[in-house]
Length: 321
Image (cartoon, rainbow, N blue to C red):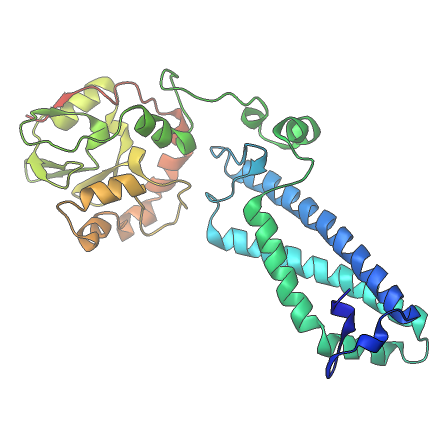
């Protein structure tokens, strides 16, 4: 109501109660209601597309959409495109009212509205769309309603929601780290340990007969038998060769990972733990994918098969030497 009292030179209280004021206020109210519905329809469409693209992520959780795992560029584009659609529909309403109210001057009235009001409307609209996407509320979209209404449009694994546990033979990569970490957090002292869990070994190095690991506290140790023991139980596949002499434990990486990425990202807890003995720059250097890795598409092949990898043995104590 207050918005329609704003004039070119301040607040116009004399407009209050006029027929024109009531028409524009009702129109504005209807536009807000329609906008709310339209935004949530766009959010529902984006959710289905994202869930198909990232089946390992559980986007619908606790009655709302969790989109933090979606790349920022895709989230920004979804908000921007929704805002553009919303503004187009809104402008159609405005022009229609202008045409009905003033047949002779409808074009001039519409241009005046664009000049004086649209910048503010556009900013408010973009902020509101961003807020709705961030909150992820679809009003009526409880997990049960969503699955029953849109189940056919989602990947089959999403329709039958079963929360994974540590005992499962396989866990989708989007949930694996959180489940393992909640079950048993990282070790903090490796001073006298001769055997460690692979979960506590983020990096493995091999070159010219020398084999070493970096443990979760950031210390570097010789590990002549470590990878050999992992191969025996089938867990060596979790260590992705990111450069000629370095492999990264992909259990500890933040997902989703773009196939053409130039650098991997560790989960926050792992990164913070390594900072005890390493600098941020040293850690990030080890996560840079070499040009050979990107050209060979080995990362793409790994990501295509990562959900087939088993984690059994992740908490076994593996001898270093």
